[in-house]
Image 1 (cartoon, rainbow, N blue to C red):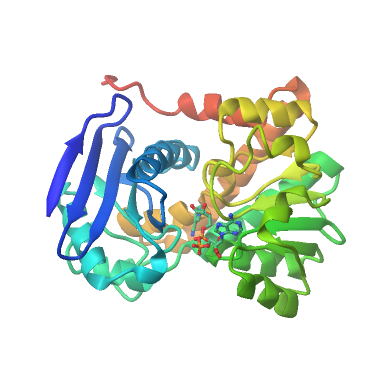
Image 2: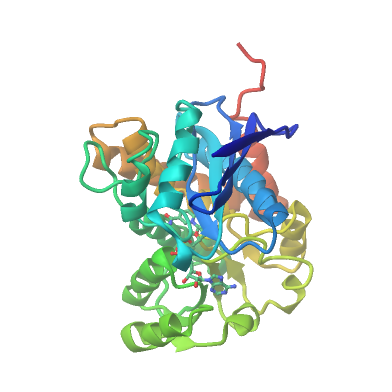
Length: 349
Ligand code: NAD
């Protein structure tokens, strides 16, 4: 296996990983370990080029530093990516990635992200102990997605309260982009709460299934960002809120699970100017890493820990949206400032 250290000024460690026998190509990025070992999921995606994968892992790992601090976890931020279609994934690739993670000696802990399952984490475990989101092991926390979805659902209620004066989702039209682990679980919660769903996925079988099981209105993947709805819940990929898409949005609020929804911080300002209330992604979707944290930090009172941290996140989002309403500032800017104050400067004692 070839592991090359790439130097990036804003990150503690960035590794390029290549394993010829298995065909693994990927990156591991540790943004910060100031609050504890870096933790963040492993993503597999058919990136167009290695540069796209590197850009993604750098952004995602920095986002994890912010997310873990926002959730007040004793964890830093890191992430790993594998270049390739998840449908082509092999056990040998996962084991090779585990080996590369192991070489960091605990500086980075991995878990599930897009394209990964608890079973995949079980395979990674064969070559490293620094993996969470496992089933059936001591402190194993399993698939984080249901807890992520619960956190998003609560955040949608809080966002509705701020935008519409009422947290009830009865009769609210919610557009869900992406019906994977998170989007599907969220769809079920929204349906149970009386919301009307309009959904899209690049996999048409998933939208069809949501039509059958959730009574959702399916729309083509390229139409979901322009459908009229009360709330948009991006639950697929990052960068979907950008200079091209924002002018065409026909929603009053945005609250979903995808990481890095804003292409740039300025896009958050544009949303605020358009009167679209944006709930900052890394506060909304931190439920999963809270769940993973119980495994990394070996928390015995797991349920109590998760409930307490989720409730604190709700309070944080509520406070940020209140301040945004009072000040007219973009919630994402307020969230960044709030979290930055919680991240110790690099050379603090
Ligand atoms: P997943 O791989 O299970 O699902 C992603 C879904 O999005 C798939 O069904 C895929 O077909 C679909 N998709 C991809 N591109 C799309 C597009 N352009 N338009 C519509 N659909 C598209 O992943 P997941 O675990 O559900 O994660 C979804 C998002 O939530 C990711 O951004 C992930 O980083 C974020 N997230 C996940 C968790 C978690 O607990 N799983 C936690 C925090 C954040």
